[in-house]
Image (cartoon, rainbow, N blue to C red; front, side):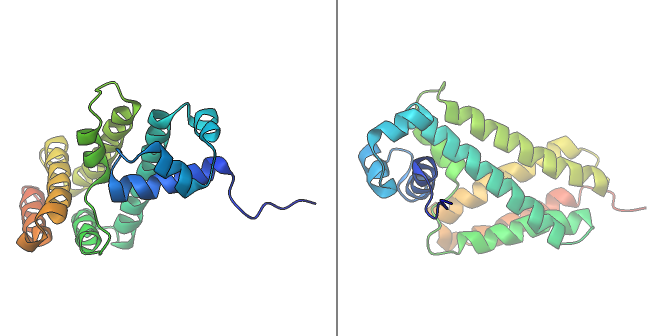
Length: 192
């Protein structure tokens, strides 16, 4: 019986690309990706059709992980929708304080991928739709008078917090954004 203990080329490429595209950006060279994954160029084309396919798949993989983290964070905060939404901002505050924090992977990809038809853009748009729907669900539970609008505001605050956390951490964006998020949530009439 043959038991595989090391990941295959596809997984190694995904792992390497997920790390390198976050630390160096989506413009990281193919040679660096292949070297980090310890795979031949042929593996890239066999599994992903090229670098664009690999980037899109890395973004897909990352969105699934990040959506799960949002849900875990909210679930750990209990059942109160306000507390669940604010927990997201508290979690992001700890994220931007991590030494290897480089900002929002999705915003960075959208800005770096000049071709509007790049498959990565579809992935990032869908991710933002999922997060906005997640927020909107909680805002409906909260009784917010404009849940879709407020969900869009919260998503914009998340983007801004992550961008400022990477570019201007000395401004304490987490505290500023949490205060703004509270204002968005306080437009809700509250439980009756």
